[in-house]
Length: 482
Image 1 (cartoon, helix red, strand yellow):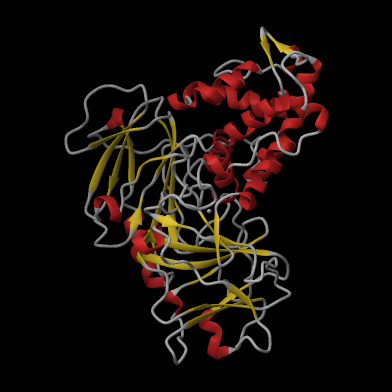
Image 2 (image 1 turned 180 degrees about the horizontal axis):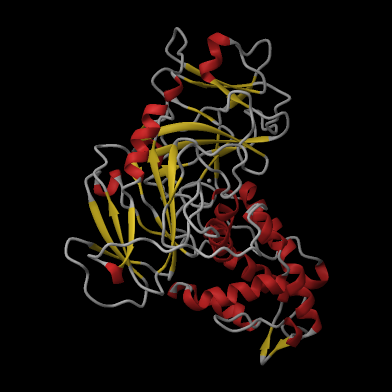
């Protein structure tokens, strides 16, 4: 689905104890009676396997996302071959399943690069002041560069993007960006109001976003056709594909990916723990060689790990007015559980300086949001979200995808010509049915079942980043509410 250091997780000290909730017999095991892997005693093999699963979740998810989004011969909608931009020409709709928690405020320009083959030149045109950003994610989902209006302005720009092992000279006029992994994902966003006129204007900008392999610099270049693998599942949501993997499949893929996308130097502890289970970069993972108790623990790990990842949404961070804030997006350090959670519910999350995403699944009284009820979110006069970019309130179903509705509205924002109350306050109406013509500009359609709300604040001001401004609560409407 980004701020200064405050949402989803407030740091390692707030993380739940990783052994919590495990059966007593396992929790009371000791090094003396633990199984041996090589010469290493493993006190709790299930805990090691769960930690390994959580640690590798972003890398496996990014790879599966890459497979789905690049499995085409030519750019087509959200898909494009490796090394080419897929430029979405309209907002995603309720059928969009490629990325969880998509937005309906910007048009995506997405590209996967294999820098292990060679570097790439990225050229950006003059944006004439239009808001955009081009965050570059490592294979572990950490953002390592963000060209864009906030950081580099909107003039023409050229970047030379190289992998971690590259050395050489940079072409004249280009700025070097050295990536920490060979696989990277550029997930660009260009602001668009959604009108036909603005769509055309943004399309003209997108058409000038250009990627060229370093080996053809200065020469005419036509991107080659991509290879289509009919064995790749392009219909099932990536998260579901990842979560369905057996432990053996998952850890084998993780080990393969780590060869070209090395863990950070600071990740020595989890890497060593994985090695104790036989999960090592570039080496096949064969659980058959593990002691029976360890093999059983490994097989059990995915279910336990997925539960822990999703449970982290409720267990961490600070809540204000029912909203959960995180400023730990885009760059996670050693907070591997936070990184896995954001991968699951907001893959492609920006740095906090670029966007903060308050999220809620409950109303002001702590009750789960559900379309069986009607809600209002009231911003007092002068207290709309303080941003230098833009803001919107987005509706998701329980799985963090858009909700089908009769007016095809997935978010509500100032571009909907919001109507203010006589006292200057602004009400947003969140419900299944229209609140009536006079209020429809302020209406965010809801599903009939459970749902989640995300308040996007792009290029947030300090009041958002330091917590002095918070979103108002979502209040269930009763006869006495309005």
